[in-house]
Length: 122
Image 1 (cartoon, rainbow, N blue to C red):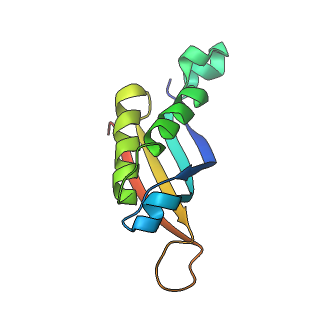
Image 2: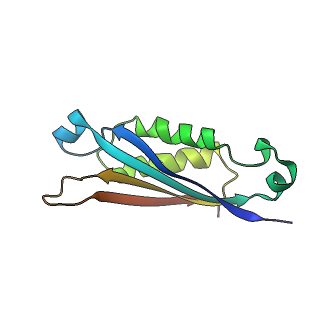
């Protein structure tokens, strides 16, 4: 019996150095990362064992590791996170990663810029 469920880690906040402009590379900015993933939770629901689900700490560690690597584009950051999760956490059948940049330099008032990339084994 399959019981697909959703695991989310939202509002993971990082000071990082992503962007094309020299000031972004030098000063950095605040970024948030949101993760939403689907996986079979039947075994975990019955066993109460971390081995039967996704380890939130491992997931956070993947995101933190990739956020430390400067990139020009949010697309690149999100894409690297997706590839690493696919490789290290294959239990997720589908998932999405959203990377948001606070106050992007767009020439006017803008609270956030965001990019979402999807991954999984479907």
